[in-house]
Image 1 (cartoon, rainbow, N blue to C red):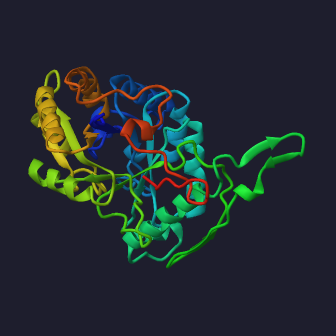
Image 2: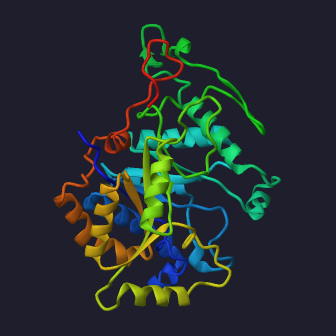
Length: 374
């Protein structure tokens, strides 16, 4: 059976455009409102989105601007895990400065809370200001650092075998210590000694998502990234980048910035107004290499069908303004894709790996498991 074309959607703040909060008229309390976040993610789930991402950054998007209000991404994902049943939850968490041991435990806990719908958008941080905020010196080779962090996080997720928790009342043992392992990881800038303080996640390993080139190839000849996201100035470039990315990960999708026609303004008019309202000093994630679509919903459907026919596995949509573009996506775009049997809505009880057609990885420390990591 062919794996359906996946649809990711970023739900950070007011939208992907740096002027989205200004255009929406949202105050900081609304930008960090759990009620608003839960409503947006439920709307995405009901529309059949495969997974949502929660973009994050330590520094404000616009220094000193109230429109930069944001809560930490894994916390946001964990919060909506209890208000959803099918959509995948993929927070962005950096690999450059946080402690990898804590990152592994935090993400494993998310997968437990979400009953196997957790993922990890493994980001890198290149700004010296972020290093200063962590009280550390800048990391010169962030791709190598990302490789080491993703490797050790994957190692830690496997430190508990799937059946390590035995709850044996007769003997008074909660876990079987022979099924818990103690890897000693020595990276170039840090070392970690297991085991994790959290049992193995329901998926065995969360789905690791990363932008192309952010995570250096494994020195152990393992696939560290499950889904690679690529950009492109045009469709042909994006398709070629996705094809190249598949050599290093089982799935490859395209990051796609989206501005759709509204009820009273065209996409071009909306984008012009947004560009004119960008706060001074904005650190923009907009226009950093993603493919872009501006226009009506039917044109976006045609574009997505073309990407699928060209062999791309899916897309992550970056709506310019969430409150304006998500309703159009839910009403006019996603139903058309399902009607064409291009996509399939994730089912309650399915894991994110199920929805993406990815196998559950074997535990590298379980001698009984001879199945290779997917």
